[in-house]
Image (cartoon, rainbow, N blue to C red; front, side, top):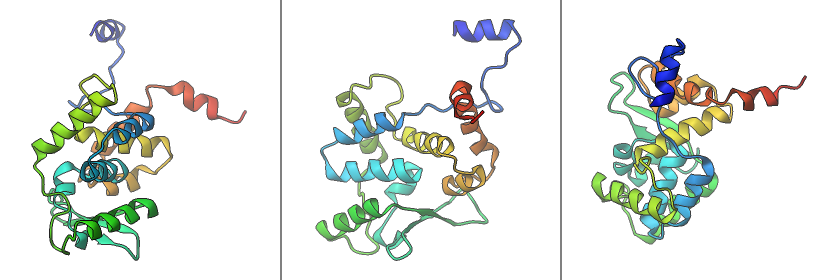
Length: 196
């Protein structure tokens, strides 16, 4: 808070996009710690999907085996917020796809049955529990933080914003641009990558 006051006095704008504050996220290492301490296979898979696809929690909880194309290696996500585009397609890694297939077979999930028959509150509680076990004692313990972490990791990995926008299912690309503000906070890292 004090830093923001100093910035305001000096005429420096804090990192906002419109009225939005910067999203909170975990580093890749922190996400791995969270998943490593999650012993329930259902939640481990759910956390992996949230982290590696950027889906919203509500979208992930609606998933059925029919949403996965094991041949083209994608997950087809219904996107209710985009009227013109009812679904979006997100690539999915081989190892994660294998895990999804094994999970479906182990629990005998039919093509149109939900993969995760749990509530949003149950997911929130599971995330909070895993964060505590991973010794991450702060206010980032929320399922939506996986989505922000995915987006930040993609930007840092050089994924074009237009592609990330499609993966996230944002109707307005300005919602995707906020993640460039997050990564712009540490400009030194970019400077050191320049080949002089």
